[in-house]
Length: 306
Image 1 (tube, rainbow, N blue to C red):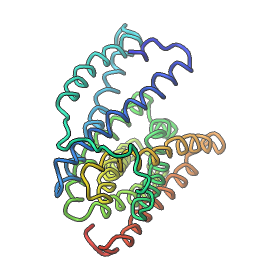
Image 2 (tube, rainbow, N blue to C red; image 1 turned 60 degrees about the horizontal axis):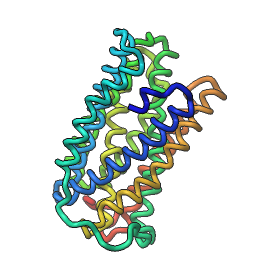
Image 3 (cartoon, rainbow, N blue to C red; image 1 turned 90 degrees about the horizontal axis):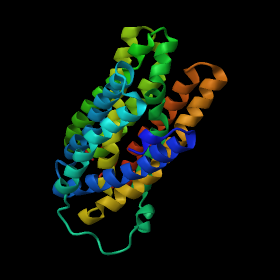
């Protein structure tokens, strides 16, 4: 609702950047922690199903907003307000529907001792690098598509395609993670995403860019769902899950402040996307390898379904 009133740049940064980002964190982490308390063997699948909701919204809302903004006389303000009116009852429902199985932990707010655990720290480092690299195609795929001759109208749907594929990329790997190991699948998501990002400039036709959007949506979806599931292997106390997730994802999310601006600077400097794909792909690939290496710090070892 506040976004619909914004007119100056700083107002958009305050409403959509700072306030929305803070509130999304307050919504996401408690939901993940609550769901994790109800599942053990199928925890990764449950988290994948939960986080898939955001990718479904990422398909519906951009298309709906584009239609309202460009095909009606509603204007920006009322187009945003209508989406807010749709979201509000869903948020109210979630406040009553999401409940924890266990009572809240009564010790310290943070658990600094977690950062003394090698596995936890390595997972966070790997996740940081993945987050730093994975946003390259998510931010630049429409611009890249236009640079390859795609019409702007069709290019605007690339993010919807990415999010649609990401829905399956969050659910299916979550199911596989419960069978083949959460760290294994998370590491695989980082490696495959890195390779896919490195291949950005190979997609040159409309068909190629659409297929590329599907692939990159699926692989990066594995990172989004796999990161939360991977952090759950670091604690045996279900009451600590929310704190471990919040601290780990909070640190790793700082990569979103580093990755897209640096990649945007490369586009401005070189006028193309080769350098962006190299930077994003290499750091994402490195993140996946570090997560895989973190298995060596566990009792299960590198060659295990963990």
